[in-house]
Length: 409
Ligand code: AN7
Image (cartoon, rainbow, N blue to C red; front, top):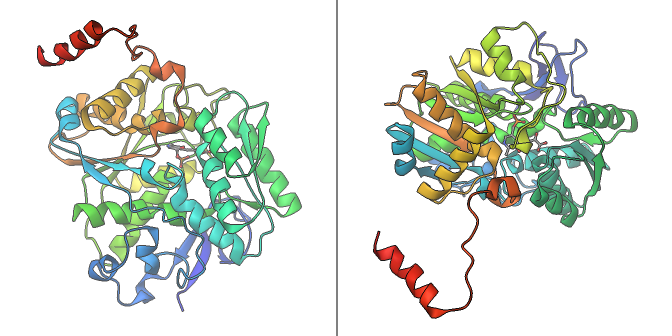
């Protein structure tokens, strides 16, 4: 039997794996721990004899097996070598881990399969989340697959239409709160505990267990450890999850070095970047976060302490980027590489550009950008501006001239 428990990242108090709680008695964040030393035979060969998805790494996941896993074949996403983008960035070896290829089009599916599987094991009769959109879409899909009722609460103004449609179509009860994401999370969290609904935001450490597999896959695909792993940061869960993945691979003897974790936020929603840059003792929340990257329009990230550890322990970096820089990165990635990502995901590329220009990232080293969501989620007019199609009447001459212009360039 694999030994699995929950542990406070601050006071190290230990809780049973089946205790339903989202914080330690001391208020600290909880993480799921696995006794990695006792796992016995784990190797890349063993992993690679299995299908390429989240469950390939079952030894490092907090379940005995995946017989009862609620799965839509999440994970197993492409790692693209992006040479034309690298040239634009002024770098040598740039890879895109394209999480838009997950079942609902974002990295959230990695965590939600584990989160919903855990919910069923615990006998949960209902699940809920607050969301800027992707968590809602993912939870709606996995609760549909599991046949468990689900409520998702999103902020009224700022959710991408594609994500809203996903949650509705998958059959969740979708609630638009007249307030911010941060208000939604705080209310849904309190109410979940009061009525005994299972909360599946990233404050739930089981979600992050699935999300850590992005680190396993990156090394599996690259065949080595990159120097930098760059992620967009919102509620601060994913960068912490990826870092946990690298640490566990090292503990398991699968790697013998680790990357620097690089966290990127938008200028209008950068409480975490400010915390790191200014060396603050505690988070200074942003009351009304604003950015075109609606997925990361978050002012009070609940997992900031975990993300801070990830950046500190890994000798990592942070940067903030403007909306214009995000949109430019989104366009370059799409038009140079054929990889279409949503604005939050493009923030990682925009951040790399900035950190190479400032000399903080060594452009000769290997850089992996985790691009967390698909472009199809967010066809917002602000993102289309300047890319509009050419309009013509149905005349052969016009079409002929247009086609000929392709050859005369
Ligand atoms: C595309 O869906 O918080 O730092 O409610 O959708 O782990 O929060 C989304 C976050 C990055 C940030 N990229 O990850 C939600 C939500 C995309 C995202 C993030 C999100 P975290």
